[in-house]
Image (cartoon, rainbow, N blue to C red; front, top):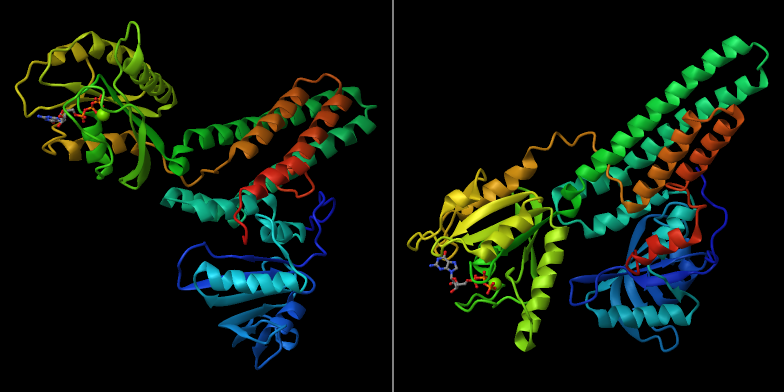
Length: 464
Ligand SMILES: Nc1nc2c(ncn2[C@@H]2O[C@H](COP(=O)(O)OP(=O)(O)OP(=O)(O)O)[C@@H](O)[C@H]2O)c(=O)[nH]1
Ligand SMILES: [Mg+2]
């Protein structure tokens, strides 16, 4: 499928270059050059047995990069030559592997830009790949995701998307809608046989409803399982001094949060990502929730921290509410207990190494996990309980990951399908279906809204 068309102020006649590896000290750095003059530029700066313009595609050549003006050797390198269309961008491409670190690579880039290439914009190599039709937009998005994945589920769904799982789904969906649209348009033309005509329409509208319900289920499932990719926000709350930061350190297996005997130690929320039973959790340590009547001075800062805690509480996927076994349940505990009731939560009773003054019966039917954060007691069981919350999920084989852009587009498609089901004028129903198809096409097609493309590619690193 060719996606060439409007290319939104994006010039493919330029030859572009960038360092493709991450900045900082490293074993090697890779420089990419892509575009019509890529091989000619390489000819000018590379001395080896074969000239890049004469080299076969996908071959690697040892030699030196020189400053073409002074003939001074800059580095010993390996040059890989790719001839169009057999390259990542589909254009002539050169990859130079030089010694690592930023200095040498920058020196080579300087020479390349002096003789005609310009620096690539973020994601421009992938953008070119999309515009020559080697990849659709969902696959470009998957490329971006792959670079950023942090867990197995995110990796799985990104690689499936890269291999075309989402594109395939969109293709099948649009084929189904196209078929129904054509059948409706056909019936409109042969409307003489009124009775037969009505029953046929009914059948087609039922079919649209089926497709719409399927699509809605796919969107819902993706939203429910989004945590597999994005991680679960697990927020630790409790009144001051109950041991939230101590628990945060235990669960994250890091000593990141400051722990003191003074209530109000944590003022800013802290975040740490940890993996429990293969699931990514973003742990958040918050300032204690408490009742403040008139926040003044230093207390004002604490009040801000507390406000932040409330925001975190709203954003949480799951809350760990911590209580102190060595103190009686008080009004501040009641405030915490009340605040978390409507959220998925786990109750934790900390400081079980100390004498019990806390009345557990107050926590009613909820399971309470007794721990001692200080002496590392009950932490394993708690970790297990947190992970178990998410392992009840059904098998994820049929799961299709949809990002915010895909979800938004598919929801619009649902709306147009629904409008056509309810439409009494068949011509208008057909127009609605055609609109649904156009909207659906924007998920994969490069000939889409310029702002959408800019947003996607601006998130890429330069050199990708
Ligand atoms: N005996 C005992 N002390 C604990 C335990 N957990 C925490 N502490 C102590 O309780 C005090 C408060 O601990 P923190 O982890 O700072 O409590 P916090 O809830 O984060 O406190 P704020 O940030 O002030 O709201 C410190 O002196 C900890 O050493 C425990 O399991 N047993
Ligand atoms: Mg704290």
